[in-house]
Image 1 (tube, rainbow, N blue to C red):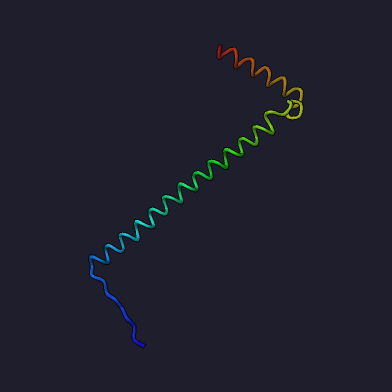
Image 2 (tube, helix red, strand yellow):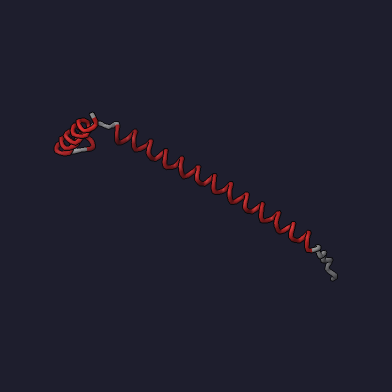
Length: 83
C-alpha cells in the first residue's frame, strides 16, 4: 500500500508549529483563569459557611464560660486601644 506523504515547506511548517503553540498557550491561560476562579469561589463559600454556622451561633455553644470571659476581656482591650 502506498502512502501519500505531504512535505510542507519550512516556512509553512514553522507557521503551523507557531499556530499550534499559540492555541495550546491560549488554552492553558483560559484553564488557569477558570481554575483560579473556582478555587477563589470555593474558599469564599467555605468562609461564608463558617461565618454562618460558627460566628452567628450563641457563644455558649462554641466557647466554655472561661473562654467567653477571656474573649470579652480581649475584645474590650482591643476596643480601648483602637479608640
